[in-house]
Length: 115
Length: 113
Image 1: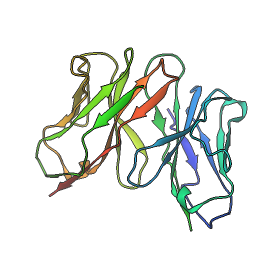
Image 2 (image 1 turned 120 degrees about the vertical axis):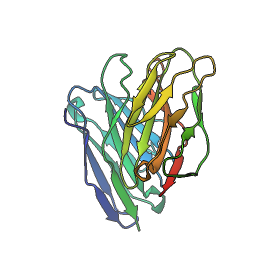
Image 3 (image 1 turned 180 degrees about the horizontal axis):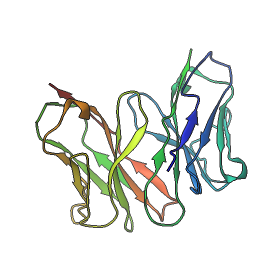
Image 4 (image 1 turned 180 degrees about the vertical axis):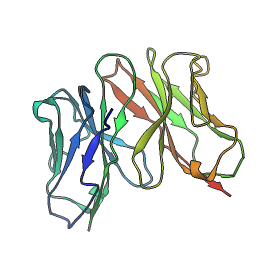
C-alpha cells in the first residue's frame, strides 16, 4: 500500500511571501488532516476534511491559511502571506472510513523555514 | 474533553537499559490508544496501538497495554538501542469525537552507547 505523499520536502521563503503544500492521501482514505508541528512541540491540527468537506478548521488561521481538497482526494494547504512564526513542519495524514480505529498514516511532512 | 498526559522528557538512558514512558488519558466512551514515534528529521510513524481494554500493542520490541482501570497506556521496552533515540507521542483516537487524534506533548528519548 502506498503511503501518504507530500511535497515539497523542504521549502525556504521570505516573510510575506506565499507558499503551497500538496498532499496525496492513501487511496480510499476519506479523512484527511493537515497538522502544523513546531520544533519541540506536538502536532497541532489545522484542518480536517471528510471527503471534500471541512469537518474542523477551528485552529486554522484563516486570515493567512487556506486549504482545499478537490474531488475528495488530493489536498493543498496555502499560506499567504507567511510570517516568521509559520516556520514548522506541515504534516498531512489520512485515515480510512468507518470506526475501525486504525489510526492515522502520516506523510513525511514539509519543513517550512520562513526567513 | 478528551486529553492525554505523558511524562515529560527528556529521558536519557544507556544502551540496553529498560524504558518506561508513562501515558494516561481522559476520554468518554471507548477510545483507541496509540504510540507514535518521530525520529530526528522525519515525520510521525505509528509505533503500536490498542483498540480495547487489556489489548497489548507491540512492535520493534516496544509494548504497551491498554489499562482501562488506571486509564493508562505506558510504553515499555526491555533493552533500548541508540537507534531508539526519538520523540515518542502518546495519542488517543475517539471515533465519537469527529475522528480526531488527541496528542500528548511528546517525550524525547536519548540513548547513549
